[in-house]
Image 1: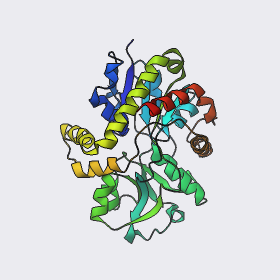
Image 2: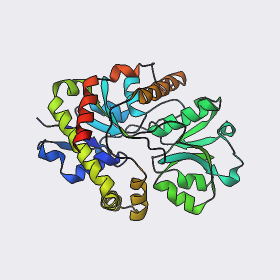
Image 3: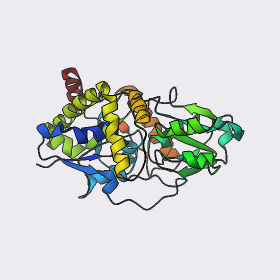
Image 4: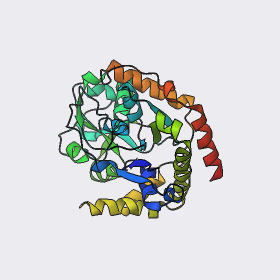
Length: 313
């Protein structure tokens, strides 16, 4: 049986696993699906819509069976009626990014963002960060002017005055920090745990348990290698950027990887509570068509597989 695993650089673990050849030892017919090669949806207005292509591709002939993303896509999937189940989460990635503005902007707190242009990679973990920050400040999504940027884009727009605030992520945030004096409006630490996470279709988990176990085992082994060899792992990302005609700094990528946790853990009640809060806020702000119960997406036996793989590394 061919198993299709979706990957892209934003999920560091799967991107490295794609290059390591570890999974192929147990799943020789694995097919790696570069999400960047799939048909892209039309642009959406982040003020009124939440893109859900990463989760929707789990349910199409051109998609895949397993994926790792940031915080928001599984909630989006559930809100759009997709029958997904959680597989695992990383430790918190609280150093990965933050909501910033130029120190000279006059914006001193999240409460000052009313009516302001806020750059966010819409549909990623960044949407949840902004929603949580706004909610804590007594604001809602409609109180700001959200501007959709890529996960590592938006810094130039902030410097050029096209954005008033921006959710920056490393390593791209490093370049902006070196150029301008920034003010942190809210950090990820203390707001939410922001883990990497992995999920799959319920039917795949139930009908192909051996294949799912093999993926989990391979991810644990590969993540242990990343922790021990962050510079070698960073080279994969640099090579990818250069192959696509861009420029990347190996030191910056190594620093970014050193600042992130690796290894899969079983989902926890605290994580599910955060997911439920995100789902409730997305629905309340009309960014989902309906509310969801995130605990319906938990298969308890998967947690046992994750724990066993972690113990075996």
